[in-house]
Image 1 (cartoon, rainbow, N blue to C red):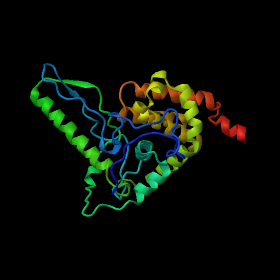
Image 2 (cartoon, one colour):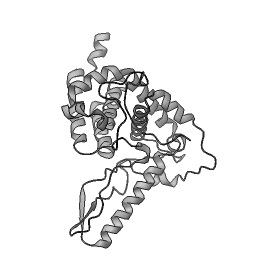
Image 3 (cartoon, rainbow, N blue to C red):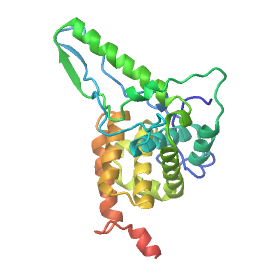
Image 4 (cartoon, one colour):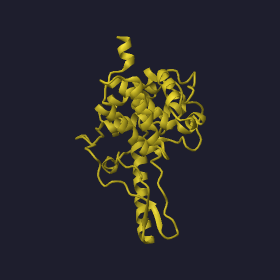
Length: 275
């Protein structure tokens, strides 16, 4: 089994040879292995009032596991596409080739995966803001739960994809990555125009965010998914794996993308011009 993904960024179809303008160079502390790093969570404070991160929702917003015990939702496909895109950028390789390599990778001898982890995993866990608690006991309980959730997420995201995702998710994720590769150069030009200057000044620190933009733009232009659905999903991914004001910026960037590149019927202007 290959190591858990970690992400860097350059051109999807020619990543190894030519870094893109917004996505180049190895990232530092921010660019870690997405599969092994769940969202950051706050730590309990020793002063009163005690503050820990709010616990994740107790149940997912929609069914996520099929009869085979594997993830089956489009959210899982987008999350997997992000994980592979992030890893491809860090490795400087083609996103589709990396996806295929991960899918066909042999398991390590003796590797055992407990599918019960999937039932505890929550695609809708966003960490949340600080939560005040009244006692050290409550703080320790919440911190312990956060640690368990983080360990569970790392276990799930680092497992072989075929053990975690059903065929629908694997197929959809690959289709998204093919679209990402095909539209990469064009979307880099657009991203250069619509992202804030701070992101352009330090693109290595924004690899996750830029990958989310690429995936969302690719899905809009190639899959015909309603814009509102794609934007909401992209914002949720940003809430889950990014920090700061990233969800708000991604929301604004994608709305600008839709406004400038789609007509009122939702048809891509580029597609109309080609036709």
